[in-house]
Length: 103
Image 1: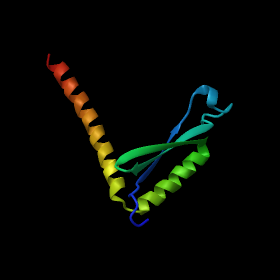
Image 2: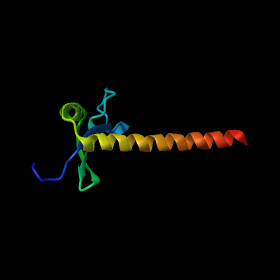
Image 3: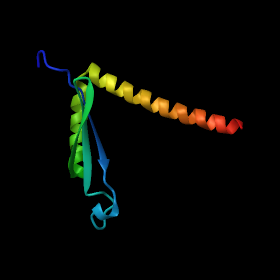
């Protein structure tokens, strides 16, 4: 789209694996949640979809394949922001463990 906002997407899935949602005799969950993250007006928005696990896995693979084949600065920024948050969490817990070990 010319002149429209840049959009970045990220796809991921989460299985719902509580015993009540599993099919009898199988270890695989019946349903899974598919989360689509996109950038809209400088904010990340999330859309959630639910389907059977096989369909969700297929959708996530195909969407991620498409997204990986198209370079986007917004997508790179999203992953960099996620990594910074992860690093802050691990460095905080490391500092906390280090301080408690010194006492």
